[in-house]
View 1 (cartoon, rainbow, N blue to C red):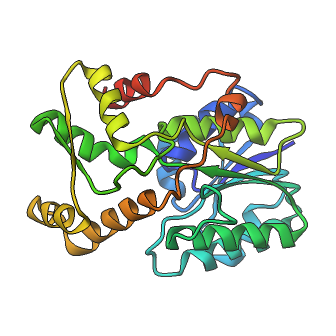
View 2: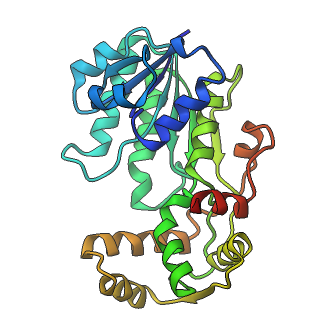
Length: 284
């Protein structure tokens, strides 16, 4: 049995590799990467490293040959080729290569989500279903790392700004999602859909957890979208980045990330860390 990981040089991919290597022989793992030279600097000598740029159809077709089970890590939006097209390339290549199972990193509640961020994931899930390949959709909630800059700034200023009102988020560290992915890939009878994340909480509750983790008193500062955007621009963010932050706050406000589930804790054998512990690890 050969186990593949796409986009393996990224943080998620590297963590998934380390976890997977505790579950199956490392010689059975194929890392699929855009930059082979970079991968050689990251992974142990002897690792099966293959080129797999999502924009290169022939390359994908060749490199996925012999892979039985695949962790398909979604690409970042905003590249030269639209993300949906990249994903379609991967799914088509997996089908052509005879991949038997895909574990895909998707978006919370993807089939019902309204956020523009969910659209590519919804489409990719549909393509995987239509391919006839067995699958698990790992619908990852928010990475704690996504709010790291705000957290670090709050520890300096003691203020934690946000504009998501009482919207809730299932925060946990990226490492936990990646470990969950490796376990799904090796499960004997995986579910078709996993809603991965921590317990959904609001920003005010996140601030309480941050205080508990650091012993430092932090004040939540609720703002309007416009007030928050102006503060981000003043802090040096460009218009596009500030706009993305506000769009994220709006999807949280709309309840898009309020998806309660024990799936990640169950997959990790009941060992999903408490959020305050995750914050301590993140800040190290």
